[in-house]
Amino acid sequence: MLTGIKLRANPTASQREKLSRWMGCARVIWNAKVDEERYYRTFARKYYPVGTYAPVDQTAAHFKDAELTPVAVGMPQPNHP
Image (tube, rainbow, N blue to C red):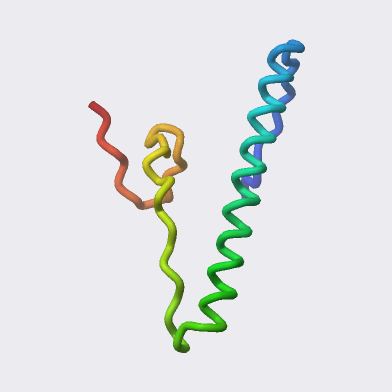
């Protein structure tokens, strides 16, 4: 079973800085969405009837790039012009 691929990268100083900024931004966004999801679940558990859930926030979905988004196995591939 393939669990990952290890690659060694030797970026230049400017590339290291850009990668560090990119990973920092990604981490901030990830943590914010996790906190938001935790808030919605807690709110739903306290105030919604049993078996219902808070709405899923899709406001940032239009920023996704179809080429860079991983595709699940068996899902149709996006059409590229």
